[in-house]
Amino acid sequence: MKVIGYLGLALVVAMILVPVYFIVVTSLKTQPDIYSDPLTWIPNPLQPGNYSYVMETVNFGTYLRNSIIITVILTVVQVALGVMSAYAFAFLRFPFRNALFLVVVAALMVPNQITIISNYALVASLGWRNTFVGIIVPLAGVAFGAFLMRNHFLSLPKEIMEAARMDGTSFLRTLWRVVLPMSWPTVVAFTLITLVNEWNQYLWPFLIADTDVVTPLPVGLTRLQQNEGLTNWGPVMAGTVLTTVPILIVYLILQKRMIKGLTAGAVKG
Amino acid sequence: MAAAGAGPLHAEPPRRKRGWNWREIGLAALLLAPNLALLVVFTYRPLVDNIRLSFYNWNISSPRMRFVGLGNYVEWFTSSDSWTIMANTVIFTVAAVAGSMVLGLALALLLDQKLFGRGAVRSLVFAPYVISGAAIGVAFQFVFDPNFGLIQDLLDKVGVTAPNFYQNSGWALFMVTATYIWKNLGYVFVIYLAALQGRRKDLDEASEIDGTSPTRHFFRVVLPQLRPTTFFLSVTVLLSSFQVFDIIQAMTQGGPLGIGTTTIVFQVYQETFVNSRAGYGATVATIMFTIVLVITLIQVRLQDGNDA
Image (cartoon, rainbow over all chains, first blue to last red; front, side, top):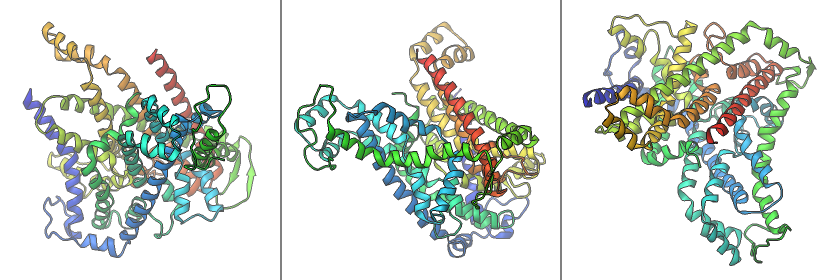
């Protein structure tokens, strides 16, 4: 029984790692070495030329910078908006609270792919094409995070909020001193979900960014593939590795929290 | 207006009377306004606008629009391309859901056993889920390269000639589906594993004492306990695979032979931005949203039934 288990384990590991090895190794091969049949498993010679090519001639440095700018701004904005909305829905009394909450949550049902046409026309008419504003603003609204944070806030002990209320503690103090210290794991989960989603965001930036100035990594990568793919896989594979390494480093450090965060929707409250 | 942070917000004891606290309402407005404004402008407005646009012939880069009534809908429902595209969408979605759920459950059952190194394998299997679909698409286009790729080399070693994943529509759709499953398997697996670990261990022991065969035990005891998880996953994976764009764009751009791997999402993009027929694209988007809506409503219905 154990033997079958370990065989299965080995098979799974191979299924994940063999393609990864193949991709990484290709990125280090010379062109004649890539176009050889049968393929070579150990590159001869091993050379980093494809990497210097994509960094110097294809602007991968700029793509990396743009990805960082877009991801960081969107993550900060979305987490702030999500916490603010959740605070209002969980702790404040105001008219139409349930209806407005429904408006926020129902947005989850609307895929980005459906809103692109009208949003593209709007963004183009504002002159926002090829700008960070044009990429970031339409993606900044939060539905899932607001839902996640609100459910967490509602699970906090009522007495503590009552005490803060009695003491006449201001909103910002209540948020910083009372609510957030009891909420860090959920805030971290929310942050990591947003980070991964925004880093991998494709369709919208693909439509809005025509020039390298604002193009993020995934879009830059498919542009490189369209120019060089099939005939010059080396640089394309180097670009793939560069696109994935930053998020994999984050994953390596925070894997437990990241798995928890990205599967948070599955936990029924 | 209560400025955020300034002044005591809840100075008086909470009123239990009917009246609203205006400071509280003011603060709520301040906290909610930016997010609501963004959702209204960039999610709900385009959703409604889509319906209006679907009645026009329109090139997205020009202001001129010609009203055609239901013309775009008639065209979509009578065009043979639409049915090929719907068939592609259904095949891709069903294969993606079935494939990732069966493999994900098998993997979860495997790693539920006490095996050395299972923690590391769990992390490894989940890793592709955090990687960009575009990057995985690009990489796997090369993995499937019919002349110099990994798959053809492995098949060659066992004496099989690789199919042409680039030129043959059926195999191209297979390539895209397999890549999607490779990326998303970790998600299904992790959620199944969590559900498995939360199952009733006393029932396992009972089966052991009764001498129930492992197969029978799985279908009669384990699988029924996983029902809510199976339901949740099938809907989630269904909706997310229905919306895949990046992998298709990176691997096939909807081809070969024009629409070999075009799904309904890809058609929205293709008509609007490549064929310059934004009105028709909006029609396809509206049809697509109707499908998403129906799936979601069915889910909510069944979910309520499950909980009751």
